[in-house]
Image (tube, rainbow, N blue to C red):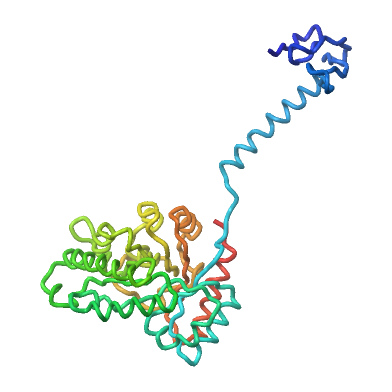
Length: 345
């Protein structure tokens, strides 16, 4: 359909229905005089382009292609749209003020421990902070047979308060008769079965998912695996999910990015705090000074946040170091928020 200029006739590259036009020299190039011709239907006019215009346009397109290719391969950097604060060590005397302070810093979501929210519900409840998760750490004993009623009351409370998730950990300790005398890995296998049964009841009570939180003790290796891995592999994906605490992964010498890729779609929430350089691998809680504000340690947060977003993480919660009250909580929370809110990943 198209005929090309042979460099001698001055003929333009054009559809076959274009007529030839006279050419005139321009340096070493020939160009076609601009002429207006009716199109095949005779209803419009078509403007011929000169060879110079054609060559310039082709050169411009070729120059733009590498840049376009680079832009497509390098998406624009992102920032976290919303950051959650884990309310910790608050009391009825300072809970409302702590929530107001968190809002002023820029936080838009919150987590709270079960006992503290129970004691401060009238102060925390009215806050505009979006409710994400109740941390029911320390309630693992209620997952034992015969404790169903007590655990169901927790589920009902959390549902009534408007939190979609509940986070619970397991340390692997022999906390009841059924676990006594069992090996380390077997205790986690038994707890995984209990957790799945509890997940069904939590869902029935109106909880979106029961989340398994990784405590440091469950990372201790044994027989080519470790306790948390036993639970993660056994979790009922319909009723249960994973609440990932980044710090404990790093302390255990594991790669949080690799974990997020492996369990993509199963981690709705992560807990964030930083770790100092030179920290030895350990499977217990460290000294309080080893827990740092985000951005003060060696965590590769851009890589972690990229992996978290790709894995479908919905909620990013700041867990400040151990504090004594709400005022101290806000001091540390602001340092972490200032770092995260400006971080591009």
